[in-house]
Image (cartoon, rainbow, N blue to C red; front, side, top):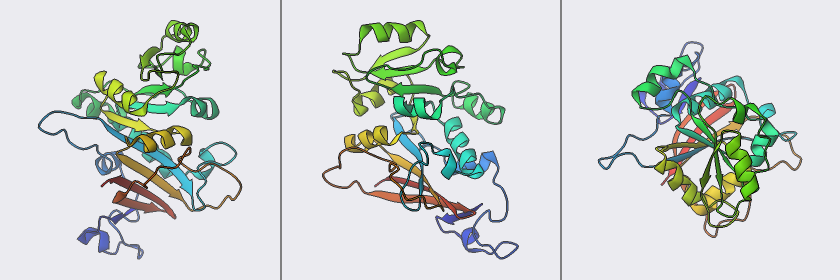
Length: 267
């Protein structure tokens, strides 16, 4: 893998075999990936919530193939996926993505154990499921055997019986909206109140669209897959369009085998 941006003397220098770019011609270590995707350091006032999204898209804008993201991903994309999880306090995901992708609890990884202890983090990030209906299979490992209790983000008007079922299964239900649904800004604040300030969302597209519309997304880590799928697959963000497009700036770009691993931040 090689770094294409930001441009430095190392980025421009040719590597053995003719490839150019910092790190070209070798597999990056997990420590290098963790440094490349580090969250912002806390300011004088202490940590504040930082919400990043991690998504993959084909060249023609498809976020999925046959309903799943795995077919358009790569081994390096999955290493970055795992690194982003290892850096996060909590992974926020929509209920439909939990159902479609067969979500499991995040696992503790020995490679990141010391780093997480030093940062005061739990052994693995919690999974926070955003759902209005709480229509979830609470017999799944995500709820029955997580290393860190799974969170349910829902509205104040959620069905009491479903809330009770979720809590009986071991999930922690967090209210983040006045009605049935979840207000993204309130979800961010509620997670921060629980001590989760390094936030990561993996979608799906509808949830990411809601976060974009609410203006709470700070960073997008987008893998551009060198594939074309055509069809009618969703984009990485769905839902109603925003009135004025939100401008983000390029923070970094890595490349391997035609895959571009980009980071864009709020400008």
